[in-house]
Amino acid sequence: MKQGSVYIYSGDGHGKSPAALGKAVLTAAQGKNVVIIQFLKEKGLADSEFLHRLEPEIKVFRFEKSELNFFELPVEKQTEEVINMKNGINFAKKVLATGECDLLILDEVLGLVDNGIITADDLKTLLETRDDETDIIMTGISLNDEICMLADEVSRIETLKIKCC
Image (tube, rainbow, N blue to C red; front, side, top):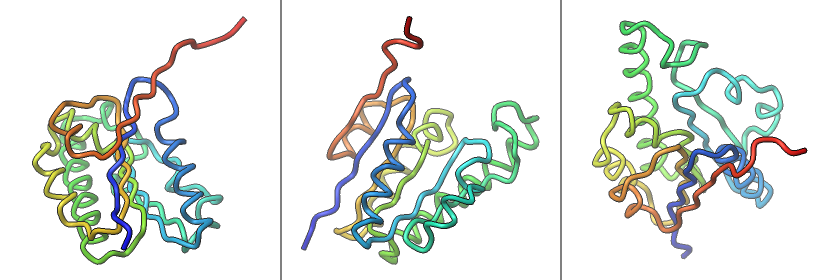
């Protein structure tokens, strides 16, 4: 039996989500199922016709209702979206508990911890609901030692140069 792993792609550079998406495509190409849950992002991948064509192997979910950036919303709308994001975390728990996928990508979930929407303990509890075979990728900018200890492998992505020539 394969032991699943927890991967973190973090850092202030661009490419964390694309790296996770690349792993999703590779996993799907092996005939396995992938679930991607996006947090703190404007609409984008969740509405992509291209990704809908990759179903049922790759399924993308976004629980936030607003099309705007979370941090630009008025406080009352942010409060609504926090509830929606927590529903996304609960959905992730269900996905892990049922073994619905071989790879679960929690895109920008580290931002939820960084912004106090969930705690590192909430994230740890979420990871404990998985079966032994499911791989998990978590992305986000900030990474603390407590969350780092939850992962089998951590990749730091940083931008060294913005433009050339």
